[in-house]
Image (cartoon, rainbow, N blue to C red; front, side, top):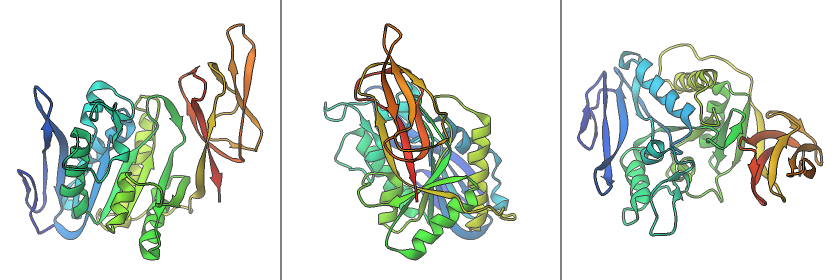
Amino acid sequence: MKNIIEIQNLRAESCSKLSGFLRIGATPVRPVELPLTIINGKNDGSLVVITAGIHGTEYVGIATALDLIKSLNPANISGALIIVPVVNILGFEQRSKCTVPIEDDYNGTRNLGRLFPGRVDGTLPHILAHILFNQIISKANFLIDLHGGDIYEYIAPCTMVYTTDNKDLDQKMLDAAKFSGIEYCICRSFRGQEGKLSVEALKIGIPSITIESGDHGVIDESKVNLALNAVMNILRYLKVLDGEIKQYRPPKMLKDLVVVRARNGGLLRTLIPLGSTVSKSEKIGYIQGWSGEIVEYLEAPVSGYLIQWSCNPSVTSGESVAEIAIFY
């Protein structure tokens, strides 16, 4: 892009790739900084922001972002990309599932994925969300947020789109879901989803898509490739990346997610594999007690798509062990 892109002390000239760090704050002993890369293209075009690692142990998204940084050439870019490969840097360092491992005013740790657009007068997680949102996200023409199953769960790959009352905005996001090539898309209203990065971006007019790929604390290269190919084709659709757009069938559309909770503690055993279509009241698993007996069968509360299973068989009463997505 012919314009120079400046973020804090980083200055990316036209047709250049520049990596550095975004200053957030400090712990008692060292600065807290987010890694980021600016890829400023040769030609004018849109600015796309790609984030990963809002949950610091969702490793496939982080690996995908790093592979994008490695492979993308500014000579093939119209517009620019800003890639933040791990947002929750402290969670990544400490292998903390879901949360930023810092007390929020002595009220426990917080899920960064629910704190956007952040607050400048809050604790470090709120400040992080505020700086990222105002210095990077707010400048975007499109946002791609990379997620996946955390270290405690298996999740079937999907895209996620939150719709608004703006038909043109919604269609751009739904088109991106189609061009991702990922078979399933969860599509629901942005209302009631406050604090999520994609939703808060929508509120200021920035279309966004979430890509969910990878799970249970490992880097599965096939799932990295799935997410990488999805992002690359979305970038072609947005006319940011050169090349022919791959054509795919529209995804199978899903709506509300329904949680399956265990009433009893014990050992979780599954009967139905992830990614299966299930019927209401179908037995999908059971909880085994310490004499070997089945203390509870887990039944599907609705018919739908079994999109998530807990990968930890140690279960406490009331714990969420699965999620079922309802078809449109």
